[in-house]
Length: 293
Image (cartoon, rainbow, N blue to C red; front, side, top):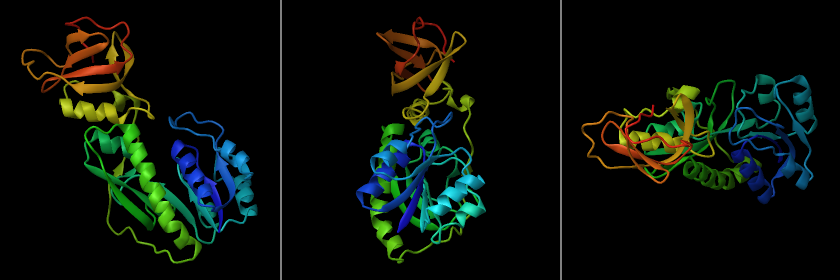
């Protein structure tokens, strides 16, 4: 089965490597040379060069010249894993089997932007990975395969990213032969699901009026490979990468007040106790009694 692969993030790289390991017939790779908004960006050209696969850098995937290049490769199916732009009808209908997309949630629930970040920030106990046949909507096409994973309180974004990849690997091994021998099935998304919105810089600011648990989830959701949560100190944004729950005996202090400093660790008052900022960019550190927003 002739496959054209589209992607430009770390997940894309892992999936392309897996396809090659499974000896799938990848006949072309579409990727980007740079990205200003994908914090987990990966240029896939090095893999294409290593395995002598034709590749093409694009900005507008729907441009006529790009569609013509893909069409000349005569793909039977297109895999689009890790691409932030919607694919339009002409490209969706180019390959006989269609375009297979990927979304790290249990569709039809939690369509839209930043699904791993939202799932962790909102304190969800589970999520999942869905491969689906792309249509002109956003994450609305027929489901090819779906698998759940649990979200532990201790998980950060890197842990969830690893769980996502582990799920996707096993799913790919399962459904690739079915696509190749035409024994796959399509499941309609009959239910109406919610859609998560795009996050902004303001969504990355810690609110110390939240509970300890919520702040832990929030900071872990934005940790690497993502952009990091931040607080405001002396008018400047300061990244916070790691936190842990502190002492709860802080009834007479306001949220955001610095209660204690041990080395580089800073204990800050929260709604229901305190939180230790363990890995952060508050350098020089504030003094006890100062406030962090």
